[in-house]
Amino acid sequence: MKALVWHGKEDIRCDTVTDPEIQDPRDAIIKVTSCAICGSDLHLFHNFIPGMLPGDIMGHETMGEVVEVGSGVDGKLKKGDRIVVPFTIICGECDQCKRGNFSVCETTNRKRQLGDKVFGHTTAGLFGYTHLTGGYPGGQAEYLRVPFADATHIKVPDGIPDEQLLFLSDIFPTGWQAAVHCDIEPTDTVAIWGCGPVGQMTIRSAILLGANQVIAIDCIPERLSMAEAGGATTINFETESVLERLDHLTDGRGPEKCIDATGMESHVMASQPDTLLDRAKQMVMLESDRPHVLREMIYVCRPGGIISVAGVYSGFSDKIPMGAFMNKGLTMRTGQTHVNRWTDDLLRRIEQGEIDPSFVITHTVPLERGPEMYQVFRDKRDSCVKVVLKP
Image: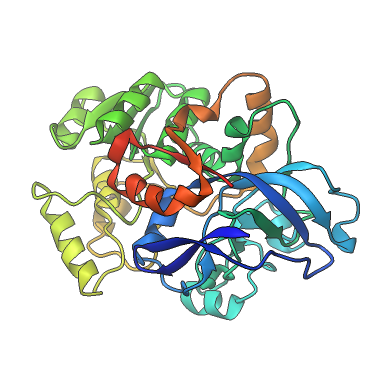
């Protein structure tokens, strides 16, 4: 089969690889009908996440049709079923899964000794990601093996296009969880840093959850226009002072809720010296992340407020203002998304027409063009916000 394969830093190729096979009774094989490139994939593309090996298959936003099931799937899936595959692999049986904390499933990381060493305790296995999370082949391919498939799936109806359902795999529940973590109240101002695909879903989630005002912060005109179309007030941090605009928009109080939809690769710019220092440290491996957004959120958030971190961080971040964080009495909530906790509700909202997640798609291309589109997505060329690949 054809698949997008990691060969090293900024080297993704469309290779012919061995077709997946059933390896465990709880496995299923799907024929991929749609997959996507995620911002998290760029962290791997840039080799900022440790634990990738040449030959690893990329991708964790995938859906398709079941073509084979193992004997242990126990009737929960059958050949011909249409499913979205969450990026988190879950057993459905461990203590964390029973609590709904699916992204920290205690069972599915098949290389848990690496996860234990780096994170203290392992997280769930993830598709198409680092070997710290199991090294499972990803879904930017013609076929995908789904381990623990009796639990790791979202069954979806016929009659709804892939484009409306695909993002149940990651960015829609990620944006939703980021907003839910804020405990949004009707009087709240919610400020969101980053208007990429996750940021766009977060904006619409915050509005659906009843925020009084949503403010979106970015510098890419296409992203800011998309955010504005979704109901947000926008700030272009290249042409405006984020601090001054937030102060004005909140009558000097600061936003009650702040969401980081950017993560470890904050924009580097001369007017923000801390970003230059972070980039320099990153280049000589003295720091793994560029946490400018995290610093700024702590500084501007209203005392007693909540900070929600949906953006991915990989390791160590410097100069975090813990004094401001502690003295202002802020709360921080983080984590990879517990996809299956949210998807029943989100699928219902799609079916009822409350939201159509396909709005974020700007490019749909064959799988073979994937290596090219990684560069287009990275460079924000051709007004690119979100890429869908068709095997």
